[in-house]
Image (cartoon, rainbow over all chains, first blue to last red; front, side, top):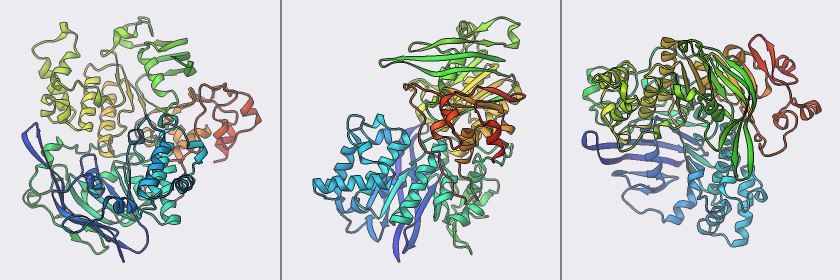
Length: 320
Length: 320
């Protein structure tokens, strides 16, 4: 079985000046995830803004060094003690897609310049082969090279530009694509176009995805595994359908309840809103305790460890 | 009540003039939350600017007029010309990404006080603001902070507080929850509903997310390519949408537990620079016929208070 993703005691601490003088933010606090599979998978990491999910993406993309801990992606050690792949090896196996395509592409360059560079520098193709690779990658995302060539980012809509981002990421034939909130800036009605693309790329072209989002509905639609994060900690992790059909952690339940779904009106009862982020990061014990409907004294004193339930998920709660 | 009479709002650009809102006639009733939905570029924000009276170059009201009937103004005639005199006190605007509208070098409490015309500030003003903000469930320290010390969600909640402090009769909220996670989004939307229920004022909410509209609106206004295509009670619009575009908007959203195949809407809206004939939605509409391509449908009252612009509105309903 291939280890698709494995993190071991992954920590990332930021120290900032702020409201409470010098504060410490544990953006990733002892994150342990293991996913093994022979088939390509889509893993979703979901959480509010400030949950640590983007930090996790940055650590896995080697844009940020963790404070401690290690991570393996597709059987290769990518952060931690030991021999790690070179940048070229790394980016041939792992590719990113970011949230705002208009920021990812410089408005001073044509988008195909980026595609070309990826083909030549990462996939090490010759110039002629590069053009074929670009055309093929664009075809996979439903775009024609002739419609893309020579154009600047402002000539595309958000959705189209994001597809170009996906095409760029596909050129080196990576094992896994790490997508950080790839559809948040696209209109809700157009998101499914990109999401369905991920699903078809997984099923037909055997690419795995790490999909980082706060949109549970799209996560439900395509994920095999789902990890829910809150203030730097994983609170629930396991098979996506199992968790979303029957969430056990109170925070997962809160997330699910907050989705504005057509056909089911919200409970008018006010949801407990978060306190100032910096404060919550410094809570002793469980970081969710301030908003949790079932929290007790033990939650203040002791941070919950992972419990493996009978249906195969990891849950971090004293009382769920 | 806000009466829009054949409103045509035009942007003057280097390329020429474009009508971002092209002939809108309708009446927005009092005491309701009205949702404005549609893809990016359909004219929603421009319509809001027209209603707010924020018509500075390059935006101009080329044709038509807007009449306001604000109860407390005792029958005084209010139109686009003088609506500016009523900003903040009787009509307020919470813009998109308003979390970026706060002055970064000034504490929030100071900015809040700045809102009040000098003659109206008293020694108690700061206390009143603190009390108001606390009544909205915001942590008291947030007021004393600088904007960068708070998360995006927290700043947005403060902007909502600022926009509602004077209890205005009309509140315009332009994508108040875009880019925020679902939990904060729910909090802000419930906050707006609460305010509307207490003040019985009018809230016009722009969002491209139909799920959000389903949760809190009483009336729905759907825009496409600078035109209004449907306007009616939310219950009706969601239960039996008359316009094919409305139906597609609703069906493009995935929901948890729903394993059916969802597709986003294919294609894109027409460029407003082109010479547009017939129904603007025809190129993407599954029911389009020669009639649709030749003749623009009129905005007709299909049943009391429910308006649709489609030649086949009745048929669209029956084919569900």
